[in-house]
Image 1 (cartoon, rainbow, N blue to C red):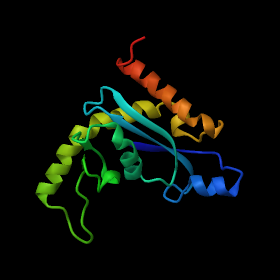
Image 2 (image 1 turned 45 degrees about the vertical axis):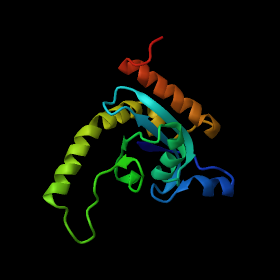
Image 3 (image 1 turned 60 degrees about the vertical axis):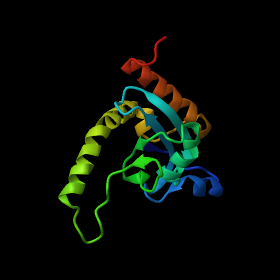
Image 4 (image 1 turned 30 degrees about the vertical axis):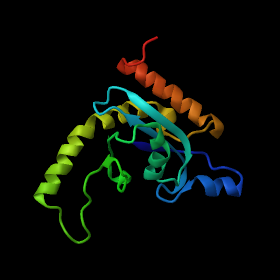
Length: 158
């Protein structure tokens, strides 16, 4: 799962180009979370990537931390990954078959716990709204929030 947070527009032109996401039409930083299938714990966090970077490229860079045989589930942004199971996209000017729709529904029912964990993370305003602090502290703050979320769901014990 990847999420983006809008930034205050950087002053330098090169920094603006680096963080401008055409999809979000804003300057953004991305974070990626790898979560257990049941949504019980956060396994890996990648934070502070520039906004235009695709989700699948972020995943491919962090995949070397896991076993080669490890299987993952992702949303449509992770299409094309070697070890990622993703929902099937609707073909252009066609409809999905009922079998494909059923498979997509089953995959969504497995991933819903991950989406619930994302919601818990986005409760913190610093994640969902414009990041006004120094952009160098973004990674540190995201890591702190993920630690607070792990404490809240009971997987991080002091």
